[in-house]
Image (cartoon, rainbow, N blue to C red; front, side):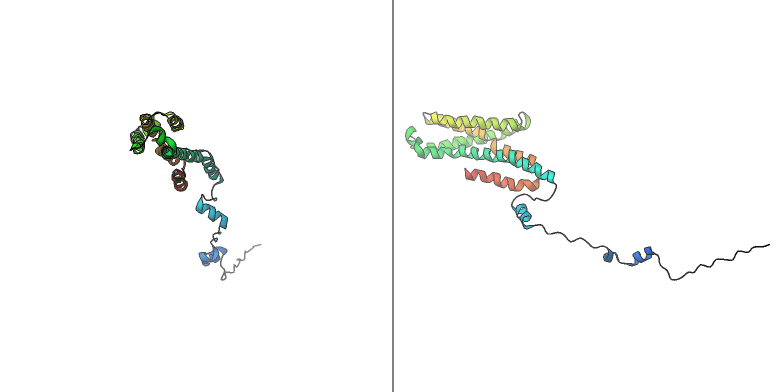
Length: 207
């Protein structure tokens, strides 16, 4: 008994696979770009005047800690520095002129001796805090020393003593501006630094 296998007929029509259909559809019709979300108004205001509230929360907390401890200390220190620098003018018109008999160019010489000390001390004080004593020790030490010298001016009996005190006050205050600016540059990034440097500069005007 012989068996024969009949061939199976396969109908081939005008069929297209799903991959062909996908390929026929333009990419622009299948992929829709998400529309950028508009930030709330308060976020834009805060970002314009201060820092953006968007981004990594850890970075924002880090910057907030820097503002609380480092930046507030720097602004206060620079304010006191300018207060000590310019208080000689207030003292001069508040009785020092009559007490010490300063009726010539003594006021100009007091400012000149301060500027001489400031010019002499600018470079050495920076070399000290860069190579020998870290800024966290050197800058507060100079602040304490020049504050003592400023208070000692109240006990001065002649203008020569004031000349010497003003010279050393300028010598010690020479570390303030470059030291504070270096600290800000070392801890803040370019985006945060610009606004803080502007505020830092304005603290001298308040004094």
